[in-house]
Image (tube, rainbow, N blue to C red):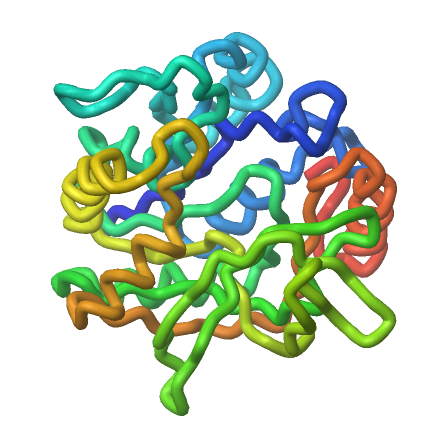
Amino acid sequence: MKTTLLIMAAGIGSRFGKGIKQLTPVGPSGELIIDYSIHDALEAGFDRIVFIIRKDIEADFKDIIGNRISNICEVEYVFQELSDLPDGFSVPENRIKPWGTGQAVLAAKEIINEPFCVINADDYYGKEAFVKIHDFLVAHEKTQFQYCMAGFILKNTLSQNGSVTRGICQINENNYLQAVKETYHIIKTDNGAAVEYVGEINPNAHVSMNMWGLTPEFMDVLESGFVQFLNDSDAATTEYLLPTIIDKLIGYGKASVEMLETNDKWFGVTYAEDQAYVEESFKKLVENGVYESPL
C-alpha cells in the first residue's frame, strides 16, 4: 500500500525574521528539521514525499534538500500560490499572506490518490507519531472520513521566545477528537500556558500541531470548503485552516478523528531565538543514539 508524506513548506515565516526558516540547518551535520521528519517517515513506512512550496523558493529548496531526497524515494512538488483561486475569485489588493494550511494541502489535490500524512516543515514531531499515523492509515485504507491526528501536550509545544498558535483539542474518553479550536497568542507562563488577553489554558491540554492522517476524499472537502470560505470570510485577512475545517466536519458528524497520543517532545523554529534550543535538542538526540550524524 502506498502512503504519502505531504510537507507544508510554503509558509512565509514572518516571525522568524531571517532567511527561509524551512531551509535553516539545525542538526550537528547541517541537517534541516525536514530531514529528520523525512527520515522518520520513511522508517515508519511512508514511501512518497510531496513538498508544498512557493515558486520563489523552488530553486533553493531543490538545491538544499529536494534533490537529495529524490535519490532515496519518490519526490513531487506542488506550489501554493496566492493567485490559485477558484473561478470567479480574485486576490484582494491588500492580501499578502498565503491563504492558509487548507489551501496549501488543496494544492496537492491532483496528485494525491492514496492515504497521506500532513506535517509542517518547521516542526519536529518525533519517530512515534509517524509510526502511529502510518499504521492507522494502513488499517483504514478502504474507509473514508476516518482520520487521525498526532496529539501533543500543550506545555511541550511552547516557545520561550514569544507567543504561538495551537489547535486546542477536546478529546472524549475513547480518544476521539470532539472539537479543535485554532487558538492564537498562547504564551508560556510560570504556571503553564495562557492566552494573551483572554485567560489561562490547561498546560496539559492536547493540541494539534498540524500532523494529520487523511485520505484522498478529504481533498474534495477542501475544494468545496474553500469556495465557501471565500464567500463567507474577510478575504483580505482570514486564513483557511486545517483545524477549522476538520472541526466543522466533526461538528456536522461527517468525519471521525482519532487522537494518537505521542510521548515524543515536539520542538520547532517559530522565532529566530528558537534556533539555538532546536540545535541543542538535535545534538542531544544524536548523543542519545536516536539519530546518527550525519543523518
